[in-house]
Amino acid sequence: MKSVSGKELAKLLGKKGWELKRIKGSHHVYMKVGNPARISVPIHKNIPLKIGLLKHLLKIAEIEEKEL
Image (cartoon, rainbow, N blue to C red):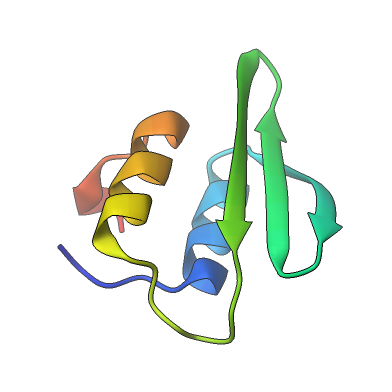
């Protein structure tokens, strides 16, 4: 799996229709109309997200790995 930083994932979520609702510290919280889920993306410079967290966030956002 390709390594992705929090900033890159945040951009992808924006393109997929997720809206930034709030920022608390280094975590950006995204929500989407019609989807009850919230996605909290840690944005720490350009440090890649850990694989388990990335897979979990992609599953919630209904984004496939090949779209990265």
